[in-house]
Length: 341
Image (cartoon, rainbow, N blue to C red; front, side):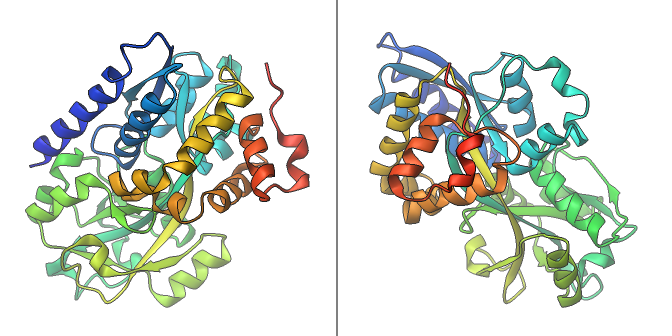
């Protein structure tokens, strides 16, 4: 089934590019996560809209191993658009983690141009283990898959586990085999995540066909520790996963994600892009529930996203114009706006 899902999404990606191929617009090589990820699914939908509404551009959706790859590729001139989280922006600004030593290679400064949703991360185990693995600390010493190495969702959940002192063994597996690995006992835990608090990542649906997985919530003490270390925590309904996840509530940790172009797209065009997105927000959310936060309140989503990263990377002047017009701009960000080319 996963192969059919991925083939379908890939076909839509090609269609999103081909639908605009008749016009003579400027090509935008917009990179995102791999096929089967939340980012790839969302950008296919977004690109399809923009290719129709902005014929002056032709967007090609380019899957990569992970979002951090798109930020690096943009900075070195390989891509024209990025899929980036607040975590990647922080690493870039602080010359840390996956971005350590990368600034010397940069040719183009990444900027913020559209905040799309939050991804909410958590953990799961096989249902047969739910009476002996009851909190995150119980994963200490266990074999746990926290996601592909380049994924920012992996970084986020690894940071959360480290904050709790959980010393697990990371096991790398293919996304298409997460369920079978959990079923066989090759791994005792796995990352799970949703987008916009409502949409499970596509590969998790396949995992649920191979294994009866159960959400593993952090204990109240663990939640308190995470909050004290500046991790956001929220609860979503178990029904979100459209299957029995063996808990009454699901506790996850969210962080912010964005789709961005560079200063090669002028202020007026980025402003136009944002107004098109807002005008069509309900259609976007219908095509992909990841956009429900944008549909609910797009200006506030931009405010929240910029708040998460204003100190890390500049803000595209087109986004700044949009936010000022919508009354969600903070004057303290005036010095954070990127200088137009």
